[in-house]
Each structure stands twice: as structure tokens, then as C-alpha cells.
Length: 272
Image (cartoon, rainbow, N blue to C red):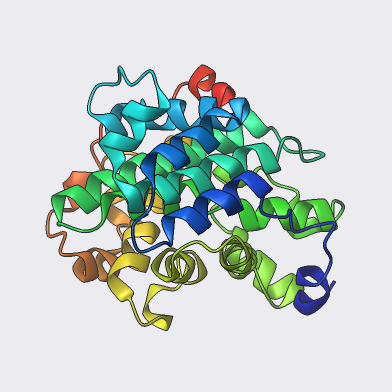
């Protein structure tokens, strides 16, 4: 299937939920009404639950304990609230993809998100955008899998397939990064998140090399964990160019196996 055919088929690209559209409209006002936003969120139980679970992830809230929508929006601020509302809605949009272990997919995606946020905090980048980009980095693969369930380049499990991008380019002429960026754009995610997803596998091809490189490093670190690669083996394959773009000078920062508290399956399962 050609890329333009894939992106033009509504069956494969989930629509932005009405409640999320209303929240984004409110957030775009000159003076957004936080009470109105909280009311809209409170009316969407499934969305609210996923937002609170994301906010209470160890790296996002710095310890958890956020129990209400009002507390979450107060903690996040308006920009981060919009990003996290959209990201949480993605979990509901991809409830099940044939042949994909969704718990494992989101567990890995949460790992990438947490690493990205940790790096962003260290190098004074937008931590909320980094978390969201990491969470969404693989959704293009889900769309491709729904559209082409028998395609060879889509068969290995996403979290542990370190040659997936190259295999998809060779097979189809495009890959999950481009599809994911198109999805993020259609859901009105901020341009920096869209472009980071688009160039996550080839950071130097985009204008914002820093943010795309941060996502590249986060994915690389999380996938090494999936493959049980650590220590000297990680140092041997360390992506120095991407690290330099972010400002990371110590490769050991991502190679000690303890870069984050790795996401357990039950936490990922709660996101579904």
C-alpha cells in the first residue's frame, strides 16, 4: 500500500474524539476557562482515568498521588494539559490491533516517554512535549499493522525490532515514523512533537535536530533494554551524533541499565 493511500483511508487513521476537540478549542482561546476544561474531562471517564495514570507515572509527577482532574490540570498547566489529553486519547483510539500485544507495545512506549522526559529535564527542554513524543513514537506502526496485517516488515514485535525502520523503507518506501507524524498532525499535536516523530529515526533530516535526536536516543535506550543489551555492548553501538545534538557527553548516562524505573506490565495494562 502506498503512503498516500494509507493516509487517505479513514478506517486506518482514528478520528480525534469530540471531547478532545472541545478541550483543544477551549485551550486555544485567549483566556481558556480551566473550569470548563475540567468539566469536559470529568464527563469522559475513560479519558480521565488514562490521564491520571499518565500523570502519576513516576517520572511525570515526581512521585504520584494525583487523584483528580483538577489536581492534574493544576500540576500540568494549560499547554501540557492539552498534550496529555491528546496523548491519553490515543490509548483509547488504539484499543486493539490484530497480532499486536498492546500491553507490551504501551509498556515499551511508556519507557521511551520516561527516558525522553528524563533527558529533557536534564538538558532544559520541554519535558511535557518529550514525554508525549515518546509515548506516541510508535503509533504509526499500529496504523500500518491495521492496514497491512500480513506485511513481512511489520511482523516482528515492535519493541524489540531494531531493524524495523530500515526494513519498512526497503519494503514500502516509507516507515512508521512518517505515518506516526501524519497521525499526530491530524490530531493537532504541536508542530515540534509532529516533527520529532517524523525524524526520530533520522534526526539530521529535520530542522529541529535536538528534539528528534532526543527521541532517537530514548528509543535506542529502551530498545536496548528490550534486547537485554547493556554495558560494553551498548557503549559499542552508542549513537554519538544524536547524543552530541542533545548535549549528552557521557554515554554511560544511557548505558547503565538504570536510566529509568522500567515500566511494569500492569502499569502499561492500565493505560489500555
